[in-house]
Image (cartoon, helix red, strand yellow):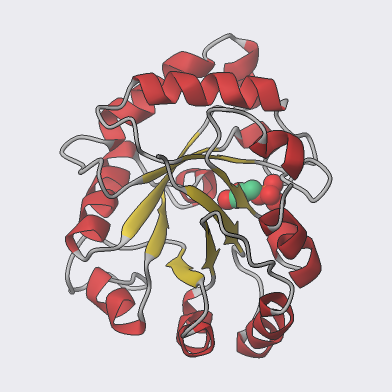
Length: 241
Ligand code: 13P
C-alpha cells in the first residue's frame, strides 16, 4: 500500500508568530479519519523550532525546504542534516523548481542532497517537472525521465517521496488537468525500482480541485504552495473527500 502524503510548502512565508497562529487554527480543523493521511508542513528554517515544539504529540510532521549534503563546513547560508534532525525534522523538499531556477541547483547537487537527507533518516521529497516550453515541444516525458535518472543515482527508494510539479502550473492557478497529472505520474512510476514510492502532484492545488486530484489512481498526495498558507484552506485540502 502506498502512503498518502499531503504536504504544504510555505516557501518564504510566515515568521514565527504567524507560524504559531497557523498551527493553533489548523490543528482543530483536521478531521480524524481511520485511513492514514500523512500531513507535512515544510516551513522556513526560522520557524522549524517553534513548529517542532507545537506539533509535538500531533499527527502533523515537520519538513524543511532544503538540506545541504555536507555534515558541516564552510557553506554560508546552508543547513545540514544534523541541524535538522536535532529539531525533529522528518521531511525535506529537494530540487524544487524554484531552487533549480533561482539558486542554480543542478541534478548533481539535487542527488547529493537526496542522499544526505537519507543519511540522517530524513525523507526527501524530490521535485521534478517540465517548463511550459518543454511541454509545448512534447518533451515532458524526456525531461522528467532525465531528471529522475540523474537525481536518483544511488538513492534509496525505500525512503523517498517524489512530487511531480509542472513548472507552468506553480503559482499560476493553471492546474495540470488531473488525468494528465495522473498519466505523467504513471510514467514516473515506471522509472522506479520500488513501486511503493509515494508520488505527489503539485501546482495550483486548491480546495476546489483537491477531490478530483486525489480521485486519480496514481496520485498519492499533493505538495501545496499558496493554498497551504491559510489554515482553513489547507485543512480543506487535508480533509479531501
Ligand atoms: P502553488 O500551490 O502555489 O502553485 O505552489 C506549488 C509548489 O510549488 C509547491 O511546492
